[in-house]
Length: 336
Image 1 (cartoon, rainbow, N blue to C red):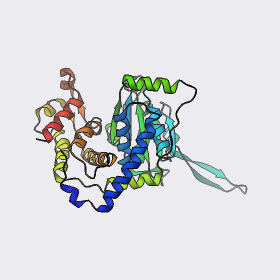
Image 2 (cartoon, rainbow, N blue to C red; image 1 turned 90 degrees about the vertical axis):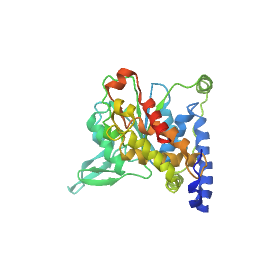
Image 3 (cartoon, helix red, strand yellow; image 1 turned 30 degrees about the vertical axis):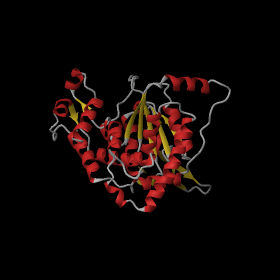
C-alpha cells in the first residue's frame, strides 16, 4: 500500500526531474544487464546505494562477478575508477598516498604530496577483509568525510566518491574481520548468491565465445550528482518515517519490547542506520519512477541496510536464528 500523503508537497519541477532521472537509471540497468547476467536484485541494490551517495559492501563466494559488477558500474556511470587488491602487507600509504621529498636543481628541498588510488570517484577495495586493521582504518575518514589527512594536511577527494568493497565469506584464513565502526560506514551490505539456471546458461554462452559484451557509458558524474541531489528532495510521509524509526529502535535489545530481539540480539543499529534506510527508500522510489517511497521500499531494503549493523548472541546461534529472520520480525511489528 503506497503512502500518498506527501504527494501534495511534490513540486512540478521535482516530478519532471523524477521522470527524467528514472529513464536514465533504467538505461543504466539495461547497460549493466548486457554484462552481468541475472542478479537483478543485486544490481538494483548497488544502484540504490550509489544513488543514495553511500558506500557498498559486496559479500559473495568466489566467481560470482563481484569485481565485474563494480567495474561495470563505474564504466556505465562514467566514473573514474581505481582498484586495490587488499593483502595483509598493504599499508595505509598504499591507499591514501604519501609525501615525498623533492629537490630542485639549485638544491632546494620541499615535500610534495603524491595522491594514492583513493583519489578517484569509484574506489574498489577487493577482498577488504584481507587488509590489516591499520589499513582498513585508513578508509574510515575517507568514507565518512570525503577527505583524508596526510602529514597533518587535509586533501579533499573527488566528487562523487564511493567505496565499493568486496568480501569472501568462506575463506577466513589470513583475514581480519571489519570492525563495527567501519561496517557502519557502508550504506548497504549486499549478499550475492548463485545465479539461476537461465541466467547461468546465458552467461555461459555469452562469455566463452570470441567476443564479449563491453559495458557502455550511459551517465556522467555531473548527471549522477544531480540524481543524488534529487533523491534528497523526494518527500517521505510521516507514517513511513515512523515505520523506519520503529524498525531501527526496536532492533536495539536494551530499548525494545520485542522478545526475539531481547533474546537473540547482542547489539542493534545506531542512528546512521535510520538515515541509510530513509535515503535508500527514496532512491528506490526514484529508481522505479515513483514520486514518494512506500512501505514495500522499507521492507525490501531493511535487510541489506541492517544486516551488517546488528549482531546476534550465542542464544541465536544455538537456536539456529539468523539476522534475516530477526529483521523480518522487525518489519512485521513496525507496520502493526
